[in-house]
Length: 479
Image 1 (tube, rainbow, N blue to C red):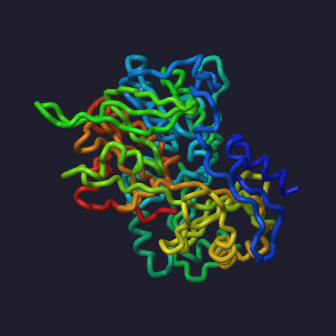
Image 2 (cartoon, rainbow, N blue to C red; image 1 turned 135 degrees about the horizontal axis):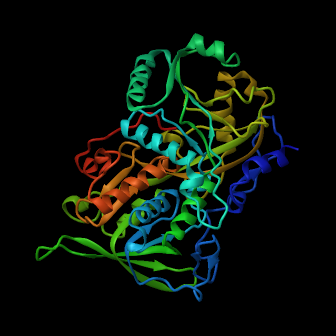
Image 3 (cartoon, one colour; image 1 turned 120 degrees about the vertical axis):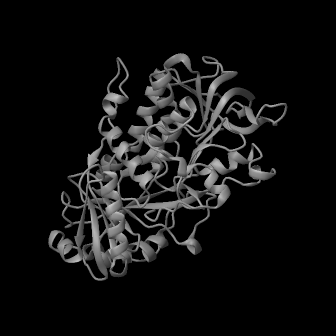
């Protein structure tokens, strides 16, 4: 029974996700599981044809559509962030701009996102990105509508986050709360006693206070957002090409001309390799952005080019559990003082996604997407059961793993032009909140490309210059 419930609620994203989620029968013992390995991320070489996304969402073979030889803007990465850049560029410039998007994995990491959006950050820019993101999600059915097709459904459902703070961090929580309110967030500060009165199932031992979102927070379908952005961008003229980025060609500075990137080498599934020339290029490759930047010599040159792009993949596990007896409709998206979280999936089920980020010593290998069930047994379940005792009776239903594009400096993204290759625009390093900030980051990148500056949200603190100076803009609320 639980298998069928899980399939209806969680596997609606897309068939590509189904292959990456392990389903488990109900399980209560604390013995290690016997499990099959979760597949490695989709390989771009599994087909003998180059594929390009058509306006109707279908894929076409290389014989039907030729790879473009040049474009105005080449977007490297076709996940939610890259597709948002393409959408916002063409929404402003319409068909005066030729935009090509190269994506290695049609599913992208976006579909493995938890699908939550919150305002409760400690950096003003992140709060602003979330406010726009919530507005975008609420209006996605009209913003991403394509004439003659069913409007997209990103399934945005309002649901507040509840972030707890220990007794010795109450003043810091209150300070963050004030920043959120001043920036326009609708949040509520509550003492531990007030939280216990509202949520009787909560064990408040060690809890000093909490902040709960009242508006502009909730859950959404990452696949619905990704497919909606791609379909709309395609209808506006974007060309999606499936292939692997294997080289970036450059022009050195000289005779009054600045250094610039000029073309990208793309390896297609059929085995051929072609070059696409561009005027501007956007790096939105998520967890692999650092590797792609290295193809341009970033991190291997002199001066500013000696600084690598410190964005790396970090593997994170998400577990699906069935918890009978926990009130469903009144349950917020919960983040404990330990960093453990749980999120209800659907209104009429008792299914929850749960997890916790490992510490530095526990960081798993990123060579594959195998799932560590001992981490759940030893690090996640005990903390959940301590904070919400009814979780002691949970039954594990399944799990999946995905990648954060982790920026080691401060867990905040780099958004803006590179200081040397000024026609290279970076939008990566979100460290786990890329899907929810995709709309705002895409709009900001499009503004900088077209206007030469950020117009709606000032994201200058997120530019590459802070990396060169080592001035971290640290986000403390990274889940």
